[in-house]
Image 1 (cartoon, helix red, strand yellow):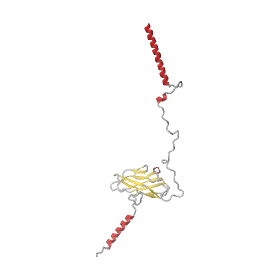
Image 2 (cartoon, rainbow, N blue to C red; image 1 turned 90 degrees about the vertical axis):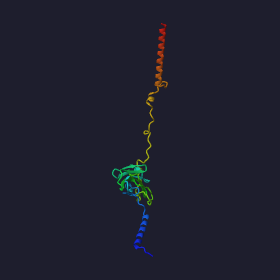
Image 3 (spheres, rainbow, N blue to C red; image 1 turned 120 degrees about the vertical axis):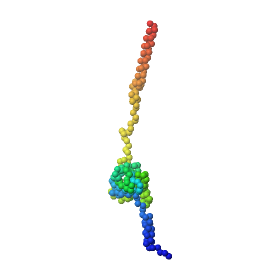
Image 4 (cartoon, one colour; image 1 turned 135 degrees about the vertical axis):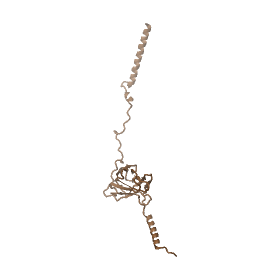
Amino acid sequence: MSRIPLSRLSVAAAGAATAVLLTAVPAAAHTEVEADKAQALAENVTVSFHAEAESDTSGIKEVRVVLPEGITPADVTYGKGPEGWRFSATDDGYTVRGAELKTGEGAEYSVVVRQLPDTEEVPFKTLQTYGDGHVDRWIELDENGENPAPILKLKAAAPDAKPVSPSPSTAESPTPTAMETTPASSPSPQAADTGKDDEGGLSAGVWTGIGAGIVVAVAAVVFAVRRRSGAEG
């Protein structure tokens, strides 16, 4: 019976142990997030992101984030990011985009959040787009998923911490007063010029017509009289 060398057994055992460890370790989020004040209800918090490049052929040109419940687009302002990149709010979050980065270069940027929600974890679902159109979707809320979203873990809120009032842009718009409501449409200039006369309620236009008729009638009578006189003479 042949014996397997001890060294070969050791290598096989080490490989098996490594495989077990790799399957047991949760998948790492390829967009990482951290904050200077990772605490519930903390105000004016700088939240930093690192979107790791996953493509070997193209660079990142845009990062789009869907904000979690408790944070509105109006609560977020831009901190800093890659040179030339710009920040813009969306209906459910924001985007940071600009010229395509070098292939393999991660996109690092930060935003300032007006106040963190009163919760233990804050997920930031992230979609990063490359110059060739490929999109990495880090949107799974399960940390053990294949495409986990970056999650910011928060400490419990301070005893004196309180929720701030909603951002001005998200608060309800006040009901306009009577002075602010749109006035009824004005009559046309023609209608405004045809005012009514006090006598009989007839308009000036009607009286003008009557006067013209009288003048014509008088002229006709005068013409008829003159013609008759001429005939008799």
